[in-house]
Image (cartoon, rainbow, N blue to C red; front, side, top):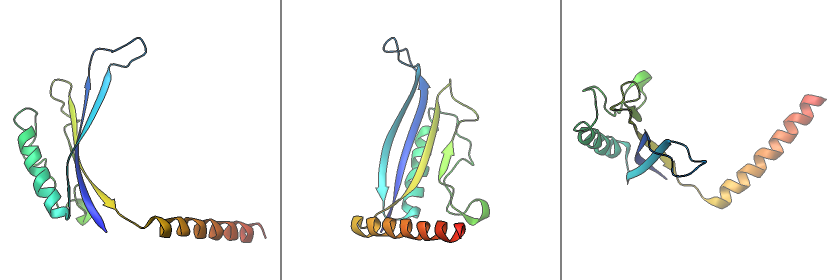
Length: 123
């Protein structure tokens, strides 16, 4: 089973909070988890519309179902033209839910295939 995770990450500077603290900050927020990519794209474009009131967002900066080579555009950012030094990264990530037991079994089978591959390579 898969779902689509919509997040926005902000990168900015802040005063250090202590002697060893960096001035660089990141804050990532989850907007939502959606059943389909189409839903996530629709909500993501609504988020970009909201961001456009505060940040520079070009009219063609949108999530798209078909982008380069027919693949979805899952990342939209203003990193090339920051607004007062603040960058945002709006991202749709596919979440894959799998059975833990099956995944563990498959990793051990893969290890055995790798060992056999290496043994044959040495012969």
